[in-house]
Length: 293
Length: 203
Image (tube, rainbow over the protein chains, first blue to last red):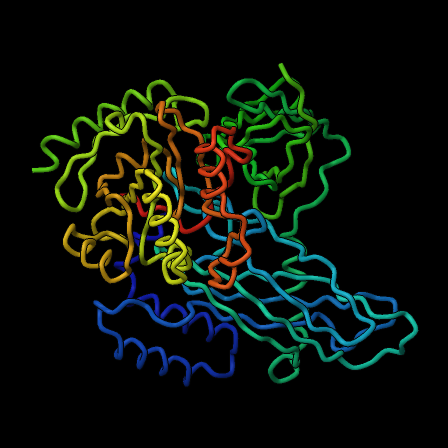
């Protein structure tokens, strides 16, 4: 999607955000719709959108933390239409959100599990990130000697850059306080939906190689099942040209993708790392050994 | 006026570059170009043979660019290296209607206000020069040696953030490359990943 094209939809955008919130908090329909109308009325066409263009909150999957079990927490980003934040490899521009956890003694945080991203932009600058809503989840591990307790008091300092046709940096100090109205089912559902969008390990039956020629990596996958189309999202920057075409073709025993090398790639690499995406919810993390031709 | 002369020349170079599958690659001749600055002066890269040339892509609305101008870092680099004989060309490839697009007089006023000191600011609203070098971000830096070869393509430094406080203590790739190259040494980090906002090319 070309973000700049969204400018004409600006007045509508405000309404849409409010509508999203209506869906989120079913009880407040009338009030929020009224807010949307006021917001619409208050904004002139010429005015640039102001404010942070996203809402972010710290949520958890469980109401209590159990000893020995990780407590899954997450940064829930809800973005205004047309705005995006970035994946762990942002692509050509931007940067991923960064979080600094403030945890009680004895707790440690694991790495963020990044859901399947989308490709952003279309010209010579291509990025990877998220639009709409995304939950960046991470496990918090407590000491195993503790008894089951209510939610530990934890907070997070988040820094991010949010972009449409322009970019705006932002930060937030977030604390974990539980869902509005104690509606844990809602938060649990968000974690379940997000898990379904996390990249999975490549199927054991896949055999991968990346043949390196002067300008390309030819990523070949031997796969048992039929694959109609695939795209590649590089986990490492500067391996492939993000804006280059990805030529998909079927082979007698699977499929392959011709990926243009990045101009920033100056040394040979041993593994091409990334996601092979076959469709929504079907992203597989791969590390293909590179062989020279 | 500018377009009548410069644009066809640039498009010609761009077409040649595209047809050969070039980008600006370190170690290879830097693509020649002709472009007009904010004072109407025409600059041709090949006329700077014998000098080091820095190309700095900019967009003053971009927070990554602002980090280097609001901290004074970019102006400091421009002053230091132009005083040492380097030609510093700032390039604006924002298309009309996009962030960072400016008229020549607006840019001249801004240069004064920001106390910036490039040799010149090249206006590239058609994105021809940007595409010729495949400039991705603001900032994005290219350095060309006196023989006309590209010796650096990448980021300004090693801190890909918008935080002003990250300027201090960052490894400045531009100064490193120029220090090395001007004393006859090979550039130790000739290619890095540029960081910043996307260049606001026309759709």
